[in-house]
Length: 306
Image (cartoon, rainbow, N blue to C red; front, side, top):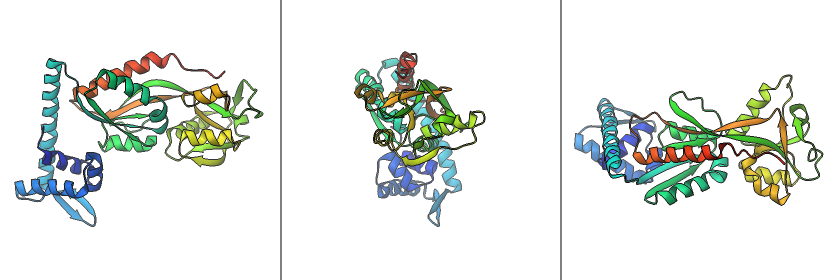
């Protein structure tokens, strides 16, 4: 409902980038530039300084940005009040999720949510955990769901469920018949790991650092960018890996992979991450409540290796 020019300006000012604003708003960069220029013509002053391919807010721009923040808070408060009276849940949300969560957890959750609230439009962006946190920081997405701890104290982080990680090996591997594997034994084999910035890789690194007397490092055979690629490399006998139990249910049923418990066991949080906002749209609150209930119902059903 707010003036489109003000919405576009606010996004550019927040991200300090016309390119990033265009991506966040699903617009072309010329269209974003046009909207900002229209607002500058309305106020008859520049709102941005543009130097050396970088932009910054002018004094007038800072005043408009601060007012826009208050205006959008009031819009959200008004929208929530009316939605609370009418009971209507509609609108659009942009969610970001790290690869594992986007591929194995969110499809069912969002499918159930969409069935209950068919008028809600949901856009999903997928990146590794670092990328998702950066999107939340830049307000490029409304809600992030990540699989690694979040260091930014200015964000709201809420753990939604615990995820168990296990060692995976191909059938016939020397470890396939053991009940559990210690860290020193794990370090003896070629290891297939995720790329830098992956939540899975970060959690495994933190786990190894906490093990007493663990001075060795993983024998990294290759780095891959998705759980599916990692599983394929392990199935092909290129090494072993550590992955979420939620990602290998199909392979366990087909017998193409074997899961081995880590000793000590390794768990990590799946967490919701969002900005601290005084007023959030009702659709955002409904999604968070729905996701909390969804995760709570499954939190006690952590699958164990056979």
